[in-house]
Length: 270
Image 1 (cartoon, rainbow, N blue to C red):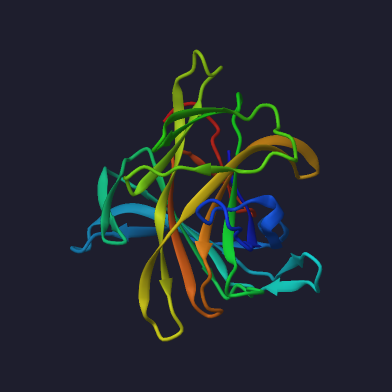
Image 2 (cartoon, rainbow, N blue to C red; image 1 turned 120 degrees about the vertical axis):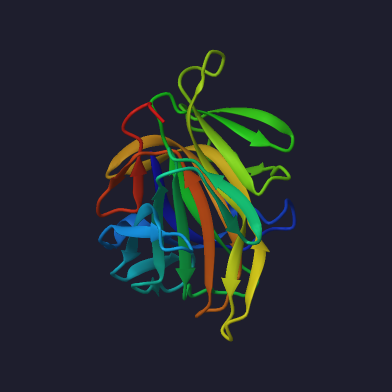
């Protein structure tokens, strides 16, 4: 399961590389609290007009209350968040921020677009919280510091800070879902994210910014029940109110649940 859980404004501290840490949180918008419009399926075509895949969009169609620490609540307006979900009928090489990534036929590409977020400060950043869960809740991270195993089946203490994700030199960063215990598991799927995002300014100027990440094994209430998750926080720099930040993520998952920006892996087959 991959659940796009929340948008979190935070004030980055003096340590680390600008990744999210819980005590830095300024405001939070829980995405599950909104309602979402599911578009019709549409064909994806290449430059010659040939259909090469199918897609659909999930768009926020109701305001979401933003809980502000120590201040009056703000509102995330309808239409300010969307997820474009795309699947291709053959392996495709796609340009993202002037770099090439490969999308295989067993993979889904998700483009996340965020606009009009009411930042409290231009010094703040915005984190997209992505909650992941599997039968065993064991994960393997491909980092610049090497392969890193994470057991998220037991939550870390609330006093433990989120861990910095050390990106590799590749554009795509990889989190693998393990099929069993860390000592005897194999990879049954993955979630990949791109370490850059596109920002469009008020005047239409397009630029590329870096995306940094942090993670933690933590308990959370999902639909009223406390469950353990591997939580990944993708952090984007401040952008102007009517500008937009677009992020591209890849996930080897097969079923989309309606109403929530939630993607659920129902089988262990790629």
